[in-house]
Length: 450
Ligand SMILES: Cc1cc2nc3c(=O)[nH]c(=O)nc-3n(C[C@H](O)[C@H](O)[C@H](O)COP(=O)(O)OP(=O)(O)OC[C@H]3O[C@@H](n4cnc5c(N)ncnc54)[C@H](O)[C@@H]3O)c2cc1C
Image (cartoon, rainbow, N blue to C red; front, side):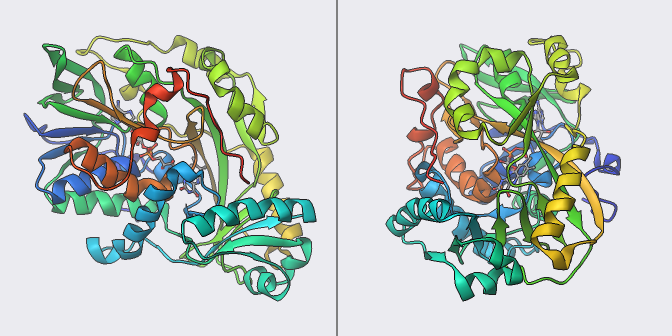
């Protein structure tokens, strides 16, 4: 993939390259070329499994190329910890293993506290860190100054994990996709998957806009589109979307070392010398028919995120209402109609980010914002992924719902998903991620440790 002209916000049309052929069969076919799909393809191909990945747009065109780039264990729901620790192990040697730079570096992760009360509540996660052997510390004073310079005076302290890191989203996922190809995977872009064919109730083929691929095993790693795809197969998958606005600055000097999260600003240094910046607590949710459909299941998440959500009703309601729920496999599907989900960044949020950046880090006041973009975060009701085999359609599997923190988790998830698809055991228990948890009467638990 040529990244010379790559900007998250535009100019990506040159990356939409339709395949010149579609393989007639594969052991496994993956829907979605985000970090979860490509990591799974890489692990499968390395084991000699014949795998084809179909991406309707281009690799990393949606969430995986639009995120903040944080690779953190800090603050995670303990259910994700075993997979995340494995993921961090993979990130550490990823560049060497695939022979390409992914921008990974361990600069640490810092969550700041405005008050003593907030500082004390951060200690809850420090206790979880101890359980998992992470070097997480409560820091203040000179320690805090060492991470953020003069801005330290704004906070009473923070929670800091020096083994957390960051990577460059526009590099990492395409690089893993290329590694998967070198290992033997077939990766098709501009290739939307319309649906499945079954024989005797089991998956027998996958139908794309460019032809049919015979297979007995399919993985849906379709990010924000998973609910629509699964719905077309009669599988109810509760999923809602929130829009996150992000910007990057021109190169500039500052004392910021770590990924720093504060209520009004989230910032991390970039490999190009600039910073990726976002508002710490503003996410836009456009009410759609699914908001009502899944409202009860999302109540716990709503209670926990209420302070961050800006809820509105707009054109998205009618777009979703008009979107077909099923379609014929021999005509255009909604996935071809929208190759790349590329929402507009919210200008009010960009203005707030600029203001908060200047007031929090005066040394960065006036730094140019080179680009702003937005990404549609898809979330599950308990803000933890859904990874499982579907019970009604043998051969169909789901890996989605990474809920705003799947970039860091991606390589570890790919390893575990590859194990699930090959019926082997990589030591990570996936039962906690089953879709059924939202339907079998289990309480929907949202981790609110931080
Ligand atoms: C603004 C923002 C900030 C974030 N910050 C972080 C962060 O700092 N750290 C972190 O860990 N995570 C972060 N995340 C979350 C992270 O980006 C996602 O959890 C992760 O990228 C999800 O990867 P994925 O492969 O599941 O989905 P995606 O990257 O969304 O990929 C899914 C792909 O499937 C394709 N697709 C869908 N339907 C079809 C079909 N029918 N046929 C073919 N292809 C199809 C789509 O085109 C898409 O490319 C952030 C997300 C956003 C939006």
